[in-house]
Length: 295
Length: 280
Image (tube, rainbow over the protein chains, first blue to last red):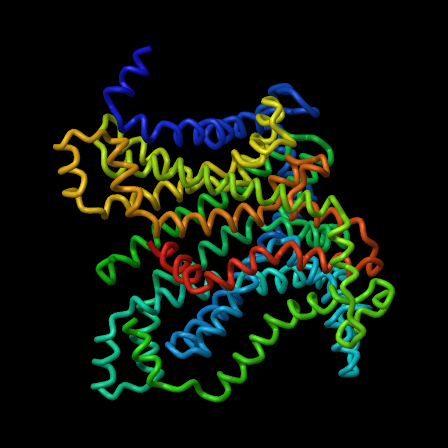
């Protein structure tokens, strides 16, 4: 019982203890267990048998996993640049104290409070070619509606459009917060120098937003690499796997076929990729911080 | 604030204003369309969802929700899980924040670093192991099973620690000299000062928990333990294209309503809190 005694002598441990206990049991233990699990071949329940790197070898040769990895990268490449550009444009336009700007900020953020279930429910019926809102609009304009959900070349765009509509709010807010941090005297100096609007934007606003931009791009990249609900509920990964993401692959392998070790190996690959993204962000913001003296 | 003053002096050029208007319409149209569909009878919508924008309107779909015990049960589950998660996170993170920010003990820095490590672990990397572990502990289809994974927030501990660090030392040193216990200082002096931070963290946690999808999907397999998000996803998969579309949309509106009301009331605070904390 020396543990209890040291807690009594060290009130600090008593305060951080409850969190640490749950943290270890529910996050750290599963992290380590997951790595262990990925080295096993597991049927339904139990620990299965040790198989070394066999699961990883199988992933390497599995065209379904390969395609889901490519799909995930492609959808990330579709979403992140468009989202970042729109969010920046919105922040620049709405960074003013007027009432109209406040209402518009609220509107552009409103979709972010919806759950993925609601968002995909709405968009499934908008994108549906026959009876959807988009189809009706296209027909009213005399155009053929695009088969977003049933065409292999458009399915990823369906995911991307839905995701952009859903998640535009947070990056916009981050850019708005970034703009608020730009020192006003920089703009005043530029005004005194009679610098043009474009000149002021290029040499004051853009460099000041460097850290925010890195943060937005990396946060969004990590988020899109984990895209799951939209792919499952909007297109079910189809048609013929054209919109199956890595996490959807994990879900199918784990809870459709109960090959937990194999699915966990895919999870570890994703973990490694996201870790690289996260570390890149720390490294980049550290360097961006050197330039402007940090904050 | 400073940039506000500068930006406000220049008016938005007309093309930008038009683009903004179109953007706002694209944001709002899906929501209004959903609302319109939810007030249409299912019969009127079969094969013609375009009928949504013209009368007759009806409340029958909302009546059907009230007569449907399942949807109300899912609402209750969502409320219990989200409130439980929020309360748990607030208690655990403020205790830990006090320990890390205001107490000296052996291994403090190392333990704090250990907690920060959790920031780099995405949920997807641990969810299958958690699922196995919870199956072993027989926690699936239970409230603790749905709540526990939401309590391991490294960000929450980091956030509360930063906030409590900024509170002046003099406040508790005097109390300590008077012989007050740490528990007393924590509950009487520090906690009341952290109300703004607590409410920010509460909003984040409640929203995240309310909208969580993958964990409740795999942990709650009995329909009476579904949360609204999962129950609605199940209903969504069960319905063929348009039969029951009005009812489905009414469920969607019903499920989002609590969150939307919270959002409309606290919009200013939520937007400021989201922007502020993410950049810390």
